[in-house]
Image (tube, rainbow, N blue to C red; front, side):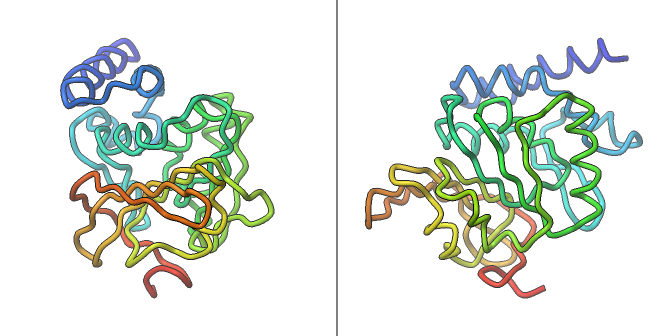
Length: 215
């Protein structure tokens, strides 16, 4: 069966990522080797490499592969970064970031998801990830500044603490909009100045927290 998953991964990389313009070799390699099917329930494993999000329980989802690749590529990771992830979820995106960063700090407010993700990532041999059950909109101040920040839930605006915790020349990718539809925004910090670039429309679960949506 694992052979089938390997083929499914290769097809996903070729047909869903490369063909849509994802060109970062590191991102393509990370997604070509990470066993996405292990991050969702066995009942849905057959859906793992399809071109859509998959539910993971607790009203959360694992993002569509293309969105994972697009967001990761936008962070321009070279392997030396300290990366902050807001919304651990299944841990799949965490694994991709861990392949491409020196260290990943991941924050999740739903304890059960965090526990499962931590266990699976340990089993898969990732030792460069730190986990915290917390309000992600507050970031993780003790380890700031971060070279890259990825927010995997839709926010009503840019959470102030995350901007503060971004290093100079740091990049953040975050979906911003209303509760039903967002735009993927890349933020680059240049001293006191913030540059923003749009990567198009998307739809994420809500970012809940003090600087996000109320539950």
